[in-house]
Amino acid sequence: MIKHIIWKKKSLRVLDQRFLPRRTAYVDCRTAEAVARAIKDMVLRGAPLIGCSAAYGMALAARQGSRAALAKAARLLVQSRPTAVNLAHAVDAMLRASEGVPPGRLAVALARAAEAYFRADLSANRQMGRLGARLLRKGSRVITHCNAGALATSGIGTALGVIREAFRQGRIAHVYADETRPYLQGSRLTLWELMEEGIPCTLITDNMAAHLMKVSRIDAVIVGSDRIAANGDVCNKIGTYGLAISARHHGVPFYAVAPVSTIDPDMADGSRIPIEERSVREVVEIAGIPIAPKGAAARHFAFDVTPASLVTAIVTERGVAKPPFKPGIRKLLA
Ligand code: MRU
Image (cartoon, rainbow, N blue to C red; front, side):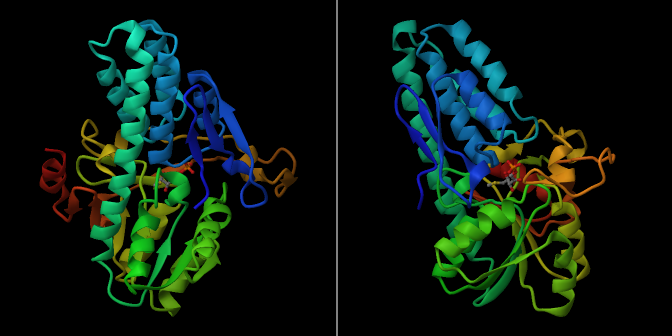
């Protein structure tokens, strides 16, 4: 699997996902500010991965040997993207790791803590893969949305981690990947990952999913998440909500796969989750080519919230929650 995030002690090297699958290029971030910029500009993306890179960003800030530098980096990193709660989770973990550490040892302590955070995400991926695969019967045909794979995490992925493990066990016959307008994470990244691994897959545009469920056997929809509320509402890439509605209409189970770091116990439900709005250029242009009349009004919501009532199960590394989600999620967090 391609190396997409490399800790080099004085810098963090990240694969520039904006150019995939056309070419492989890397960006070297030497400061927390540079990491925050890379997250904001989507050089790297995906909730768990931006959490891990924020942890390394804090480790870079710790090289200045002052708590003020850490506090400043923490603010910057948390603000770099608003929706995924993993950013705040990672930054909090790093601040906790800095408690009681003398300034001269901050750099070493935070580098260690960031590596531990990365490794914990990796092992969470594997565990989710094992638990999620059990939900699928042999030869399943599934739909996934956006990219919740290796490129979005430290390891094998959340939704794609389940798909990888299920494929290994003979439980996946075919994966349909939504292209994921407007940023095309599905076509650019998910198809690339699946094809690299030889997992049978087909690209569909987002508006084909409901039709596919109607005319063809689909056994499950499997997606990742950027923030899960305490009641089981699932925030994920724009288009997930529509996919969940279609799944319910066609009697197809809808599974969300995410580490517990994606659960935000402070959000009673999904209504207050901040939804990132990105530049409308990403809607009215594709690769710099206009696809709408000059001056056309547009919106670019980057995420949506699927109500818990449409979710069949939430797979985490600590177990699988099923409705009613509130007590199940409370137990996972305990
Ligand atoms: O805007 P992105 O590409 O960062 O959005 C990513 C997603 O929505 C993923 O589905 C989500 O982060 C889960 S990734 C394991």
